[in-house]
Length: 272
Image (cartoon, rainbow, N blue to C red; front, side, top):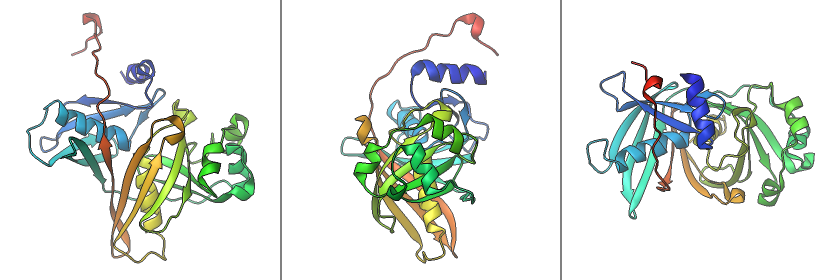
């Protein structure tokens, strides 16, 4: 079944596809499994937000405004609040869990080779993750972010066997309330480029809020991603702190209804 889900995702030709299944806990809304064209993901931000908004749009949950849904994902329960704004739907997910931030990230020189840019154009490289491990790279300017082109040989040598083979690179100010301009590649998942990566944004605010020099109770970033693909996504991310520890992270944004379709399953393929 898992291989079939990944094959379906590959045929649909989206970076991620969410499958809605019956809930296992009666207090939750539903079970959600998320697949890339190559593998299952324990968590993904935008499929979670999009799935919740789609369930509300199609009236699969009791109406209210806002509506709170709890999705059972491999990483654990993911809460998504859906509200109507400006004639559309806005979703914000909240996830509780430890922010992973291991050492051993590639050097700026090695990461620059992966991005086909100069080492001096890479300010810092670090690992972080919440559900999905990511390699983050801060670059010097938006133009450099747009100019980056993946070098497959360098990626194989530097990232393919690393803690995270996925790279989220950005420019901008990482201060609380800052704005970033970003792109993301995940070739190991069969995703050449992702227009919106909620799991990366969640991990990023969580990692920044966890730094010893941050003394506030909330840390926020606005991220613009997918511009170079012609699919701009505006993402709001927030980490909440208590006693110097991240207690939860949230990622949200507006959703857009694009298309619908049906998949016909032959009777012999059905399993009880």
